[in-house]
Length: 211
Image (cartoon, rainbow, N blue to C red; front, side):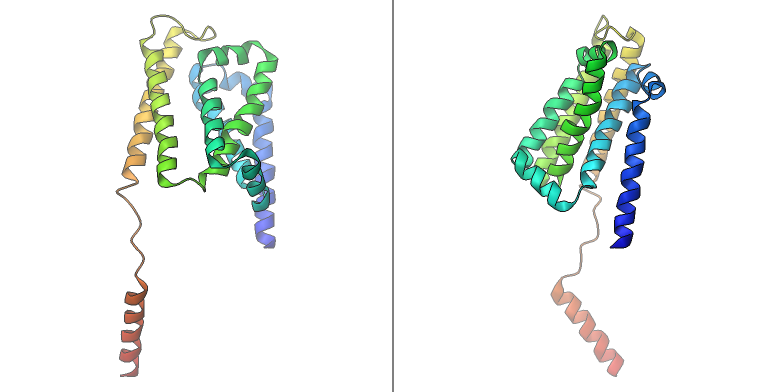
């Protein structure tokens, strides 16, 4: 138990340090210099911080938050809505132009994307998780294709070539993640032996030993 508490404490310190580093002007400038860094590095990292922070909360707190929100379905809906907003070009432009929008990004992505997904994930069925994954893949692929096909800049803060590069990476990432998710259904663990087979095996072993 003491080891578990110590591990959680170290994890919380590391997570807090990572979040503070991402808040620094140097880290923000580096990640937001390109559309790829902004959309495919900074935003996912902020969501991952929220996800991990939720998992580090005590179980009773997680259960209480999930009950307060209304269950797994409202959590998933919140995460989908918030992630859809922060994938829009206008949202990226606003974050770069307004300190208030930038602060909103650093607060809303961990709180409204990462944490709700972490709270809901264990309670979701296979169909529910499949819905979340398929929604994410399709949104990533469609938005990436729009970035590639758009004849003009859709995000005023980035050049057209950066937009096209980010779009191709989004499409490739969506295809890779979809393939990985699909393959996980065919590559599973070995089924555990049934109780009657286990009992029969142990019985045979005992008879052999006595003989």
